[in-house]
Length: 333
Image 1 (cartoon, rainbow, N blue to C red):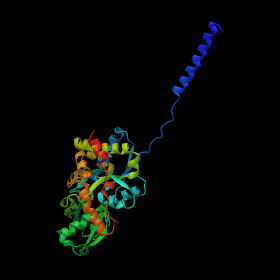
Image 2 (image 1 turned 45 degrees about the vertical axis):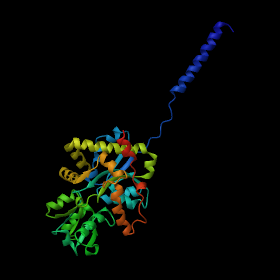
Image 3 (image 1 turned 90 degrees about the vertical axis):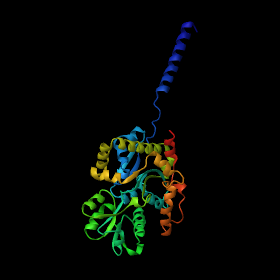
Image 4 (image 1 turned 180 degrees about the vertical axis):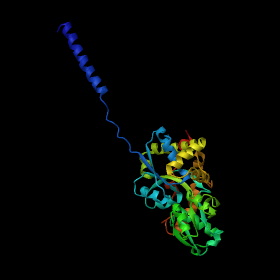
């Protein structure tokens, strides 16, 4: 073979190789399977409404996590899609979580607030002790609401058999009072302000019994195990939304109020009736310490209530319910 033929042959070889290499390098890789958005249910409660702010202001997107927040008006109704597996997470009370974990496995990843003036018992009597022989409303039997109302009555010198109980959703309480079905009951904003405007008296607040109502974000254990980076990103986004809210108060209150369809005044009043837990507060709440704000401590009283009523088969193992992983990682960054 002469030099010309060798050169031509080599050129063809190199061209062929180059085309092959070009095709190999430029061939699109298999597209990654798109992850489903993580769905969270949240009812109308100002204490955790910054989750809607996180959604509206793009904090989830900023942290590279796709989230759908589903607003459901009533607290109890928001738990249904979580129990059914229609959503991955839910904002609810610690008491709810203790009961739910007898049916499913879930993890507390974040604490939004402790209720102080936000949850109240309002009524048409002068004092709690005047409720003897009368009917009192609560959100649900063997719930955080039941614990709050019963504890308030006991501290006022009444025993459980001294009153009649009726299950009335918080936002239907005023109607029940106006109809004369109840003498008092547990509620929060916007019904709290509406009842006060009608002349009903605040007989007790959650702040009278610190830590009795703790509000938090819970996820199914499976999604926490399968998508830990996304759960961490959600917690981080919510904390950033809190910080944004405090720095841009008026704008944020307007956004949150619109998201849950209540007035600016009711959102602001309800929020001011809570003790908000930021990053430092969550470190105290989710880690096992002697601090009274730790869920390991506040959970004992709630667990005892449910054990006495046969709602729990045994004392809960808080390490199986509470995880400080994400909060501690965020704090360490």
